[in-house]
Length: 127
Image (cartoon, rainbow, N blue to C red; front, top):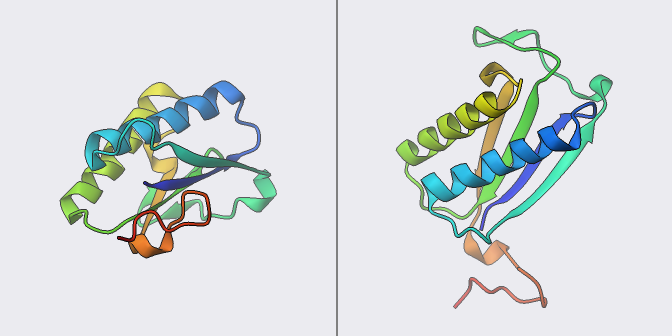
């Protein structure tokens, strides 16, 4: 049930956005074992003047292709699973696009299951 926000430069064409989106979703299926139809994402196109970041952070240089991926999900994944997810997402995106792994920033937020509603005004995950 992850909900994914992807913030990227507005100059990225539709085909590139699709590759990025699919890369994130496939990685979540592979590492977090989510079902294929659990595909909830919003892609936010951001003007270059509104993407704020340093040229280098923690010794990692960044370019104008920098993107932010925010994953909101339920709790229960191990630190190893999270590390694997970050690696797989970064690898898939950098192999399928011109975006370097240095330019992929991922933030994962865990939230309890009671904080989700998938429609009909109901908390489907609360028993």
